Length: 267
Ligand SMILES: Cc1cc2nc3c(=O)[nH]c(=O)nc-3n(C[C@H](O)[C@H](O)[C@H](O)COP(=O)(O)O)c2cc1C
Image (tube, rainbow, N blue to C red; front, side):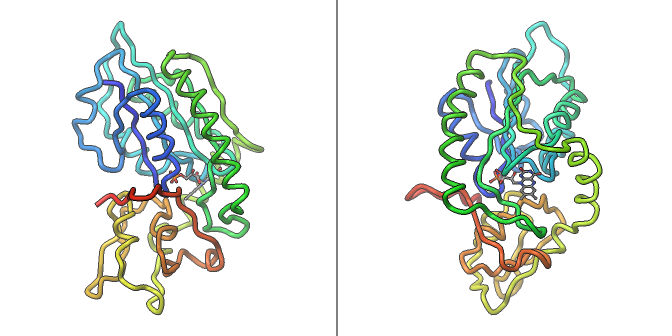
């Protein structure tokens, strides 16, 4: 079965996956919720796509873990067609190479890879904030055009396309900077709740893609340690009550705009 494996925190990559699914007819599988038998329906020859946000110029932890847990694929005469779409705010460094390496360990070769710029969701460090509305809208419009081109490539099973934006110093970003980011920022320990603002509405819990946020006895959020750092809890809080470390205090919020009557809440 042709399959799009996706992960999304604030909805950008889910939108990309859903658009692609609509244009190709391929089924969607959420990597954060997938069971161990997820590859069972993926016969040799199938199209397999990976769609996820770039986190710190690399793969989100939950995506790395999903690929780690996949069974190694046996070599067959009808190979899979493998492609990836990495969403990002600006640039991906060498995240495409990191993905290629992860998939190669499972016997899979990436045929084509794309990056798509979407509104930025990273607010954790000085100098990073959500985009101004005009820039966010411009990115979303450009992404729609890019997605139709990508879908045509996917249906035609084009091989050898590498249309990504590595940005300046990609090796430095996806190497030492990514390492520092992963080791110095204590993801879940940076989250706390402003008790004066929190209304215990549960939006942070419902939107956490890894189900890492639980409620205390008053219904307020508590973060467990299985956090992939997507910031969905921060961005979806309607009261701006979720704090994330010392640098996000005056930052904005963003999530992919939901259509009326539609909810991306997961549980
Ligand atoms: C923890 C974190 C790290 C990020 N790192 C990068 C990055 O290295 N480069 C970049 O251009 N965007 C980065 N972003 C922005 C996201 O990749 C971008 O907003 C993405 O489309 C969000 O996808 P989602 O809504 O599906 O979660 C980061 C966002 C988060 C939350």
